Length: 152
Image (cartoon, rainbow, N blue to C red; front, side, top):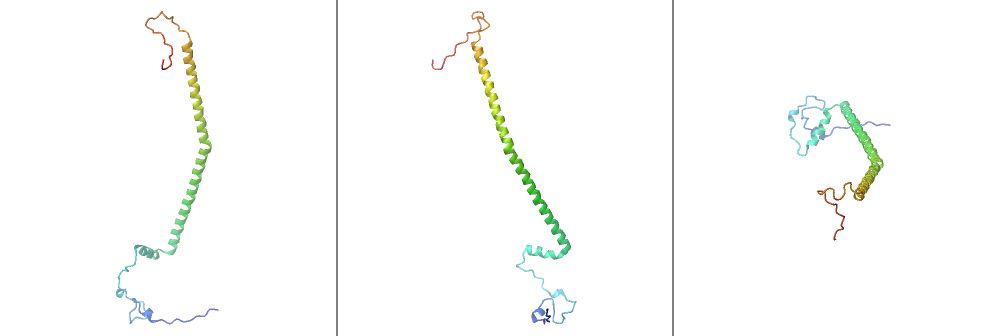
């Protein structure tokens, strides 16, 4: 059960700067000119901005708050999706593209070795093959010298 009690006004309420001695508590003609308009030294810029919240109606504040939270959650979900896509691409590159690149590089090395061996075989055949010209038929042409190991 609820018990209702009447609270009597104390002297502290009468010491408000908005009330004068001749005004009653039901008077609506309170003059604000008697209130000193000194700024509080302890008040910060953030405190002043926070006080402006009362200017915006509650429905507008709720709408703004819900839109900001929806936008933040959308950005968060988008970031997660983008992170998952980057993860899949990176993992695929490591698991598929890297071995493929290594095998292509090995294949290129093998092709280069085969080409080098073919050139060596052709060079050996040219050295062993008899010349089309007899040794004395062309005086301007010098005889090919035999290979001499270094130091001899």
